[in-house]
Length: 332
Image 1 (cartoon, rainbow, N blue to C red):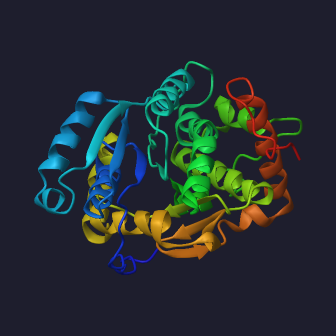
Image 2 (spheres, rainbow, N blue to C red; image 1 turned 45 degrees about the vertical axis):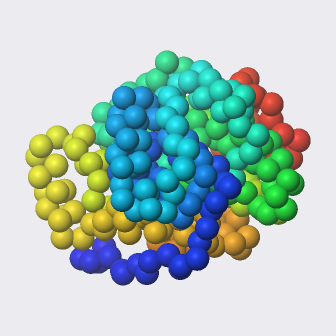
Image 3 (cartoon, rainbow, N blue to C red; image 1 turned 30 degrees about the horizontal axis):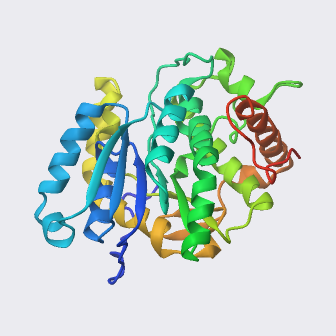
């Protein structure tokens, strides 16, 4: 890992999002709040802050609307806070149902909410928390809102967008590194729910690998004519994500961040590049900073392709209990 990260150029001028509606998950702090700010500065009409803590979301909303740059560029912006607890399928469905009841268009879905902790934990449905929050709930949100994204594209004549906050860390997944391979007869989701497979320092990477495997399989079944879907990694960013670490890890991590971490503003440039600048060539692709890259070498191996197909099929089985699976999403 290089000591310093590569420089990133600002977004091009002239981006105007007037008349558009966006959802940003995990929008109450860090990169999520910065994404909302940069959308507002580019005159977006409506942004939904989808957050687990409504009080913090409202505080972020108040602070954003008070920013001089927002008052100048977008004084009539509609900024609404909605509760979304991504570790709970029921909360995801309450959120999507409420959004669909109130809005007839959706142009941009930014799946930014995520966790990265060291302690193993299971959510109420039995899945390991990282896998639920960072992967499964994001797929459910996508499937629930995809019909509206398609309809908006038909109405406007332009593709709508879904972009996931991903990570280069997927390269060091315990699965990709062969530390904890799938056992014969073991399912992918079952593997990651199992205590035996849990490697604390690799679980965040595991979840991000699953996100990318899903995206790479999705592009085989769905083109980007109506909805362009991609994922981006903003690199190391100076946010509070490391605050959950124990003190003996937090202090050295904060030192590393002080030397090499990017500002949230730069992370916002990278996020909006994926969301509104790059075109159809980015559909089903992973971007490191602003560049489309291949992803982990593991993904191209026979084992990686096997896991990708297994995950796709298991995700269909999992989510078919909750939502209507579109016709293009067939098992492989």
